[in-house]
Length: 253
Image 1 (cartoon, rainbow, N blue to C red):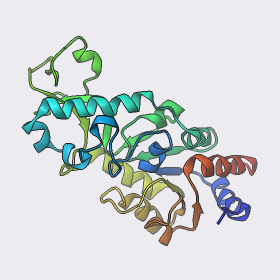
Image 2 (cartoon, rainbow, N blue to C red):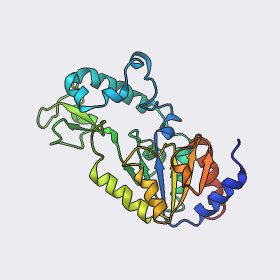
Image 3 (cartoon, rainbow, N blue to C red):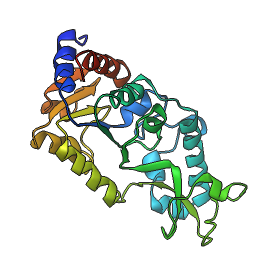
Image 4 (cartoon, rainbow, N blue to C red):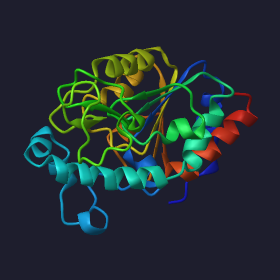
């Protein structure tokens, strides 16, 4: 069923009154920029491998060169991707009201679109650290020119790993705490492209709802957040968010 203008208008009217907004984004937002989710088949030579088995510490330690090559392939797709209209609409909203993006994505597309306050719950494809985690915040410049796979930490000689959250690892404590803090303080939360079932990240929209924020859920499919959202705007973020934000700005957000 096509998304009605009435629903857009209702949600936009509430958004126009917001004093602080949280946008909670998931893999569906990145998928619209051509980045496949972990639950989809891989690309090309990697199609027969399960990413959920490769993205673990155990897999990396067992065959670091193989897993590093897989990450390099995935990071190549991320590097080639561009922000989509959903990313850009979120950045545009920031011009009218304080917006914190809490994302489960590692691709940095929100920042590239212009969002300035982004909490990355699952880490970043742009950062690296040594396997022992003694040295963090490394970038590609720190191992440029290395022909090892994986490269070695320039400070301790340990293997470098992506600074992302692997399956079985906890979310960064500072990131999840900041996410919960802004969820508690916002008066509107927009969830986009996420199922709302992966914890502890799924606590973010739930806490916003419990503390009185209006919740707007943007997703082509009904998800866990739609069950308590004030508005479920059915459709992909790249189509719905530009309409929602444009209407909110017209109404004086």
